[in-house]
Image 1 (cartoon, rainbow, N blue to C red):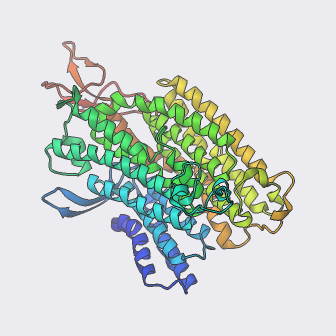
Image 2 (image 1 turned 180 degrees about the horizontal axis):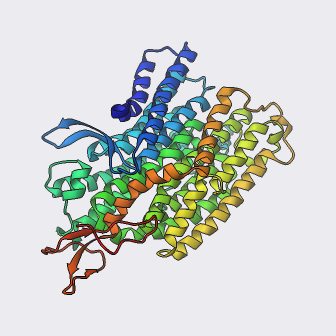
Image 3 (image 1 turned 45 degrees about the horizontal axis):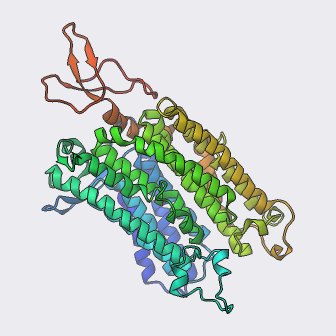
Length: 568
């Protein structure tokens, strides 16, 4: 498997989707078996990839390159480093879990699994791509399945279902209701998601095309562009081209993250989506924004990233606090979890903005940890909805009597989301907070308050759903008792707690990808040789033409300390 691991991971879901086209919906067990097999192959290959990745060697490994257009400089160029590897694993885990979470779907089962497999494969393709063309191609591919999964298998909110005209006749299928911002229909959620993501994807595409045009290298190869592209000294509109490109790339991809104020599509999409789609949406789709910013802006424009990344440090405050307060006052289970996810993505931006080894490593680990915790929450929110046909927290309650297993798993998921010691979320949050303190103490204080706020709204939701008196109209609800129903939750709990107790391999893998990136952004400086033979290192600036060699200082520990002596 070794040499072709990436191809197995990427194309197994595509192969499963292709095979399902020729299967009839009259054979639901065969449909589910094919979808499960495709997801299982991807999962096994991802586990192999994660543990076979050599953190000592570092860099991009398991490289596969197939030339697509020599004239345009486009190749299907696949490879993973310490940043992409855990995210590929997270995508495969959530896909496999999502297959079982959706086991009881009866409406067009085949089509549902086809689009779910394509959605997961598209996110995996982004995490593997070392070619800007295919990174953007897979990025855009993920939007199509989301639209169909929301619009066809999604659900309306309670407020939407209660809407009537003055005569008391339902008109929810009219264009007016779809376009009504207050209606929150599944059609509205799907359309809003597509419009937001597509519009800002075009913004990111403009930045990518500017890189391609003005680099003069006639290639989309990220590894070539990061070494040879020099866009800093091209004057444009009173500034330099690199700053314009960076802003286009950052805000183009930040919309899917989602960073405030570009976030409003996400909670609505969460609320309307079926459970498995919400799991992939929150678990990996939102991480495409952070990852693409790292892969494009951080890799190709390191000096500009160092200069402009404080923008993210400012906006992440609003993401954390605004998302947290809305989640606290929300009464819909999926809105609570959706706004919680938007809030938690602010922590990732904070870790990215601090630009040191600890904070950025924490941000990458947090992306992985959040995928597991939020995947659990959405899976259980979906189970509660399937049993009660309600997401209205005040009308529910006492369900722990009927769902002891689900309620116990819900407690574990809440503990993971708030960063309880023993879960991988705790390690990630501590690294972000410690790594960001010296540079952004105010933001760290806000982040700490955000953790307290997370505790408040998650415990409030848990109490409202599972404790107190039970409404007798939900007495028919039952617990997850079969292996099919319990397996996805047990997998995500095992991963979250397992890496929380034994985190070193995950940390070593992530560190191997983060260290050279941070060194390039913050520590690549021209070093002048003084008369007395001592090295004099100034602030990190763009290298000037000089006969002095370029020194790359590397870390001697997992802290922000660097060695005094460089390596020529």
